[in-house]
View 1 (cartoon, protein in one colour):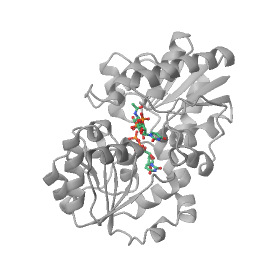
View 2: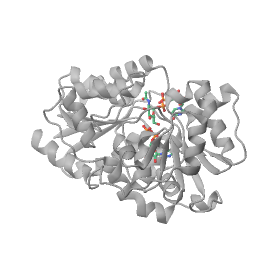
View 3: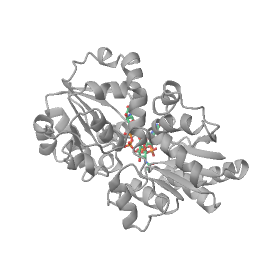
Length: 352
Ligand code: UD1
Ligand code: UDP
């Protein structure tokens, strides 16, 4: 059986790191990189350090508007599918690469498998919400990572071929945590003291594209008097520069980093402040309090379990939770047993 996996953005490389080598035990996998993320520290670093198979195709899409980016991907992916004639196309998450990968396949009647299906923020203004709903509705096999995601699919009438296999990002953390401990030296390089700094990421479009939201976030971080490490996503850098916003000295701005450095920073942090989907989950895996600068989250179980607090971009709420938010409950098991990749392999074998 031949599977084409489509990746394109940073979190998808990490998901593929957990799944590609597993599915290659039984299937021929062709890996297609759309080129949505292309800077060395947004793409190549992950392939190099996580032993992800080299992409068979990189279609070099680059940045652009949603229509331009998604449309060009559709054209190029269709050519590859027609040439390779895969039995299935596998996509991850909710980016423009996800939607293009799924839609190009669906129109050619190639079955689509969607890993991280069923997540909903119920905020249709998010490009990710549009991408994930559309992808779920044209997928043949759906791999929701949580029970909430299963229920979300059911509520939209999707009940067939739905398998909660757990979260592939949990597999990734388990696969690479020891390597990160051995290889990453970032705590020393940045002269950080364990458990005495906050790790922050910001990149969500609704935060970067609105000057007031981004300004509130940066003012809160500036006024927190905490050591904050902020690997800056290129999108966020672009908007900060164009709005003329600036950081105080308590904030260590660094370039985007590889996964091993990132999970090392997560592991040794005091708290994590983020608007990332993946980083919210990793905070939970690392048993770190998570402060989420969004108005809602897809990862509702982490909030219900008391390890994640939703603060939007309200400056006082961000500041208050940086100081006071401490989870008061033990963690429940939410994201499976770290064997999502193996389960995906077994299920695909059966449904093919
Ligand atoms: C994309 C996904 C988002 C995901 C995120 C992961 C969509 C609609 N959004 O958002 O769901 O959470 O990836 O990080 O698919 N840029 C560079 N170099 C790069 C990549 C991007 O400079 O290698 C800059 C460009 O200015 C670009 C901007 O970042 O316009 C945004 O990139 P894009 O891929 O469109 O969206 P992300 O914000 O990265
Ligand atoms: N990440 C990384 N380096 C960074 C920032 C994030 O390796 O500088 C990893 C992070 O550990 C997680 C994933 O990228 O595994 C999350 O991706 P991102 O926040 O870009 O996207 P999202 O998950 O919100 O879609």
